[in-house]
Image 1: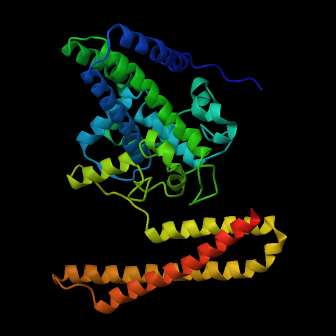
Image 2: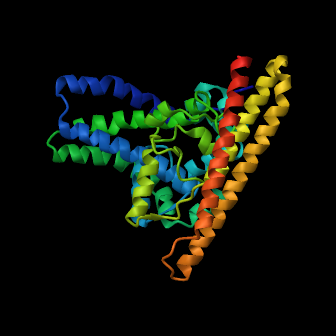
Length: 378
């Protein structure tokens, strides 16, 4: 089968900028050195472009997980152009197709099933049919005037943000090229491949705690380089959640930025999945893995009935805890609406705590059995 033609401008950008980063950046450093200001601009541009993609292109526009003030959307649009990853409309069209057809060899624009090279960068270099931007379907995004503005003026904005602004900052600093090499070229190359890691490595390396229906993986190490996007298995299972790393200790600067913006009134409508839905997804995956371990070892067949019993007990306990939580929240809301400062009835709170403890006890038994099956099957 004949491969599609190369996209000349993409090949040029993704080939020449790494060469300049490998040769020009060290050369200028040896000849002239870099100042603290220039390194500061490098980190400011690196974080700004990275977060414009993750918190802006990805979580705001592609998945609509929250709403942002116009000031923030303009910031995302400008530094999204600086990332040189196409306009919001084109990027979002590809990404929504990725989620709609994940792992499909022909419909997923950057299917990991076609190998690391293709999903990382190969799909950008050639005019693959699956890579066509179908922006006509993005009616919701086309209603945003900032999205339309960035799409119309994308090339001038990209040139200004990648060439004009770094050179202007260097001129103000009386060192024309240092900021350009660091904040312009080196930053762009790193930002490109950090984003590309999400399409490639995040579908190949890591754990699957929330879903085994696709190749997406959770990887805390990758999260460091991808501004929190490394928790990719969770994201593919719960793509409407504004978080990727749900635990407090998960490195997810995009989540922290969005939450901070909501505290100061520049973002609202933050969507999160119910903790009960998250727990249920984890239990379902644990059951799938346990059943696979039973298939591997015939001597474990006698444990299947016990596995199914404990699975149903855990699910029932989770549903009871969820129901108690909903009842307590409804009672609290009713008290607030009536203007009462009193807390919800004590028995409601006690029932909630009882159901929570009951679920935790069942989970201890469930996890112990799953661990036993995993150990013996190994």
